[in-house]
Image (cartoon, rainbow, N blue to C red; front, top):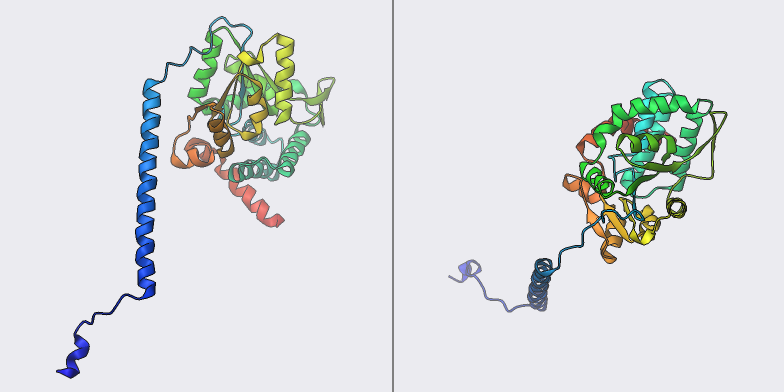
Amino acid sequence: MAALGWLTPRRRSATARSVLAGEAAAEAARKTSQELELEREEHQRARTAVETAPPEPEFPVAGDTEAAAFFDLDNTVMQGAAIFHFGRGLYKRKFFQRRELARFAWAQVWFRLAGVEDPEHMQEARDSALSIVKGHRVSELMSIGEEIYDEYMADRIWPGTRALAQAHLDAGQKVWLVTAAPVETATIIARRLGLTGALGTVAESVDGVYTGRLVGELLHGPAKAEAVRALAAAEGLDLARCAAYSDSHNDIPMLSLVGHPYAVNPDGKLRKHARERDWRLRDYRTGRKAAKVGIPAAAGVGALAGGTAAALALHRRRR
């Protein structure tokens, strides 16, 4: 029988390591339980606050002509970047080669994946765009821009943001696009949407022909805020009564100027900033991935697929 002793389960005393493991598990369970309880209480408080909060005052205020609305364009009013869609249209019309289209695509992909507008990529996109239009007449590009809007942009307008703009128009207020896209492109989009006008990057022209240089710099970041400030002064607007809408943390200077800032389809940094300051949030994207990283929904991604592949291949060759 002694030989079979190894078959009999033996009781061994708990080792120091097993005691430590057990105590750690118990402590973790208690901590998790407390955190869950706090989370339930927080949700309950938030629910109660929503149920008991007074209704928001009517906005926009009808007849307030000292108020206006300023809308960023890319991924706020329209899925994707206007300059990329414009570039696709020019490529279709043989204005440049596939190499330049890839450069446009790579700048767009970089912004979407990195979540930042890198100065080097922005400079490259700017120089590429300017070299393409240099020597062409402004009237020619405006005419082509009308066609490109119908081909690539009209179906990419966010209905939710369009409704916000219309609410301001219905209240008798002016509504302006504010974008780094060329002012000619922005003006076409504004006119097609029935908006008041557009603030955009101004390319220099002499006798109606593009020189390949900018007047100043891209209308981006702080430059947008300066443009809004200047327009408000010229139009006799009270910025405290105005609204601004954007998806990007780069537009925080513009959003901070007005009394009614909105984060629309916000990137992560803007969403965090908006929540900390109790700014209003609107998100018209669909799909978990789009909501997380701000990539255009399936239709927009599909439109970028060809150029994206070429851009990534070009980037690999550069490395």
